[in-house]
Amino acid sequence: MAGKNLYVQYVVKKASAAANKLAKNYAKVRNYINKNGRYSEDGSKYIEASIDAETTAILSYDTKSDKLDMGLSLQIKKEGII
Image 1: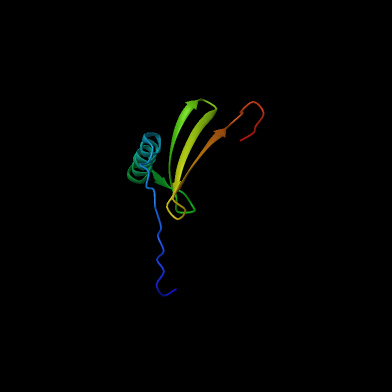
Image 2: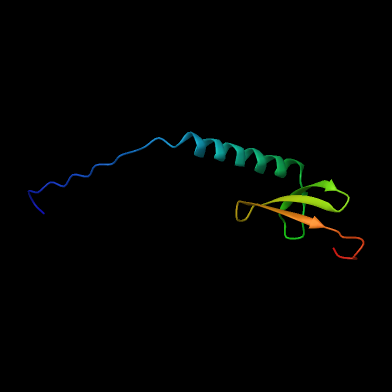
């Protein structure tokens, strides 16, 4: 391509405020779990909170995949189900 010019134009857009807020909140939750959580069998850390006598909410952070996971643990004592 001797004697020819090639021009490329890039448009850089500012990240949305919502995306920035989500990233900051994710980091806060991740850091809280890492600081205050307990280790599970697979090496991830988790926190849990009782909702009522039969229900517990669990929020875990897996450092290997950098992902949060949320779940509920239900115990129905009358039926003997966990």
